[in-house]
Image (cartoon, rainbow, N blue to C red; front, side, top):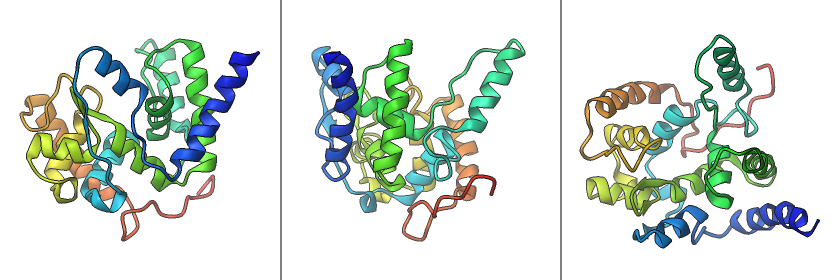
Length: 222
């Protein structure tokens, strides 16, 4: 019972705190440190991250990020339909889900961890605005071994601050997110290079406000 209470309270307390405060470290960062890797990260506010990267990440990872409430039901339906037809069961993880997982939990696919991720994702969407979710995501995600966050990634891969990323550089960074320990934005192979071109083309369809924030969330059915 005590463990259940802890697992319920832990996300709530952390989400309240990190709604305002920068995130100092995550479970993944701690694990990598234990494994002997370094830790390079520089927290920056959203205004110091190029709108190009914001658009590229949304285009690559979660096209309906500004519209859904944490879970992309359309992608879940598509994934399930593909599986029923004999295809591979693919993930339908949103930026909100990835942020909750990276901020609070460990890697894994067991039902307990997935349940905790779903609970904390729903809670995050209730207590954080969309722009805070994206800001935290861009500041804690892994972009190379020991490299975390947009600022460290931009300097590591291109030698520039995150604010100065071009559309092409932003697309390259977005493409490597699924496998940043294998793929490189600064030395892209054929797949990464082609995929970046696709993402760059999609970036134009990502609708953000003039200041780079999500527009007001659409109501269901719109």
